[in-house]
Image 1 (cartoon, one colour):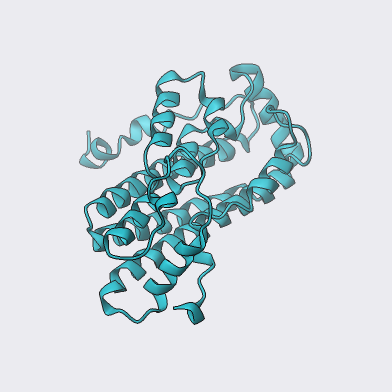
Image 2: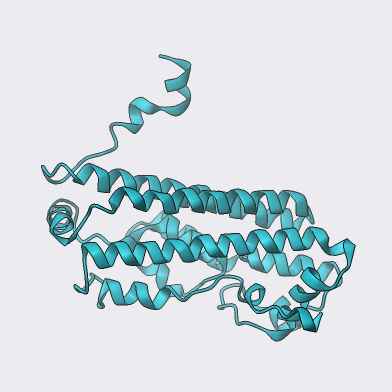
Length: 266
């Protein structure tokens, strides 16, 4: 056993692909999906680090974790390049084979992706339902729903640093959807444009949050384009066109107040 393999478990890693067809292209699809799952897990880990650092008031460490998460989004999004060859004629046989061997499969069943979305503060409870057949993972998702998101922790830190955060936000049940609030726009505007050198560290955190939101938006767009090319408007397993569902959710914007700042109001 080499040290390289002992650390990476490459011998195990290369046994984890079990195609369901004889198609040459299926391994590309399977490996990319597995790589994306690893990125989902990596990003959630960084978001949890950032949330903890916000709670502890450690803004340099929070910003570093957020920047790493943004870089991981860049890697995640680059993985779609490996599937640009796939059209509907390539994907449907794989989908049918997958259904025959494993049952109905959908990206909605990715519990790590759901955890990532919940940590960003996007929290429709129904997103946990497709994972209900995995009790441990489903329970973990519900626990994440009950905890503050990384954005909730950032806003709590802004409040502790003397910025005006309304009680309706500060005391909100974390399970509820975050609703944009004009006072939060003013708070972030003060951080970015108020000229207070004591808030520079918070601005660095805000900038890193914006990079994450950009990476998330790009992921949603690339997923939509890949689905349009390989699946079209065919109905998904959960009652609506997969393409229509992705198009509706593509407009989700994490950390909305960061995108509404007005320098003239600082």
